[in-house]
Image 1: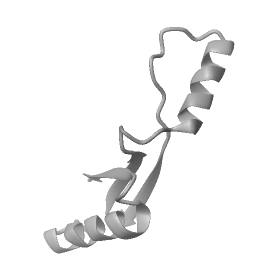
Image 2 (image 1 turned 45 degrees about the vertical axis):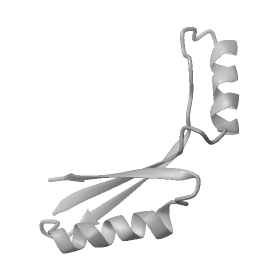
Image 3 (image 1 turned 90 degrees about the vertical axis):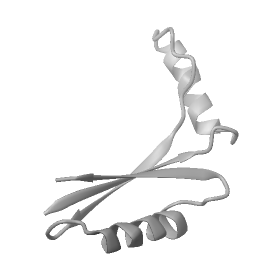
Length: 81
C-alpha cells in the first residue's frame, strides 16, 4: 500500500485573503515574527500496491485538472511508502 499526498496552494502572485486574515489573527493572539501565511489544501490518496509510472502520470493529470485550478494554483505530489 502507498500513500500519495497532493498539496495544492495558491501561486505566489495570487492574493490570499484567507492567509492574510489568519496572519492578522496570529498577531492578535500574540504570535510575532510571522512574515506571511498562505492557505492551501491537501489530498491524501491511499493506493493498493506500489505506485508505478503510469499511475503517477494519471495522478498528476488528476491533480492538474480536478484537484487544482492551474490558472491560480500550483500543486506537488509526494509518494510515501
